[in-house]
Amino acid sequence: MDTKTKLNDSLKDAMRAGDDVRRGTLRMVLAAIKQVEVDRRVSLDEAAVLGILQKEIKTRRESLDEAEKAGRTDLVSAAQAEIDVISAFLPKGLDADELKALVKEAIAEAGATSVKEMGAVMKALMPKIAGRAPGDQVSAAVRELLQG
Picture 1: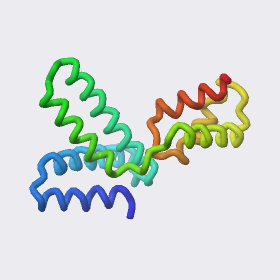
Picture 2: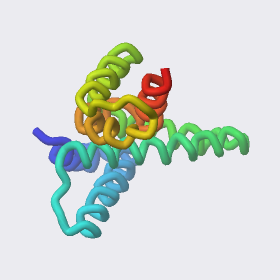
Picture 3: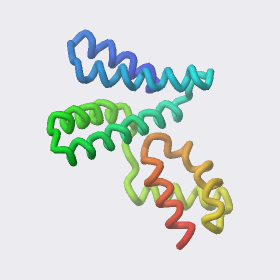
């Protein structure tokens, strides 16, 4: 079962259970997916859906940081609850060693030797990682291995 179907099924379950936080979060995520599909006039594949989920989590983490700085514990708990709901739909994350191994593989595949070829490495790498690691973490690992 693909992630988009899981999201829709989970939304229906949340509506039946009266879980407002889960329902609201899933509606926002599904709306973000639908918006991208409408804008691009395509049906998104699994990797693109997982990318949107990562983006939604990143947005909520930024909100969480801002709420913490402002001392708004109500907003902190709401953002964390939304992050927890979305995270349940992402595949198990990569640890540092797994990420490093995939990066080395992609560097070899792309034949990259310098940071100038980082784009080619990222292009080869991102479909393999799809939702299992944040993009900024991946690019930092690629840059580190290409420089070293």
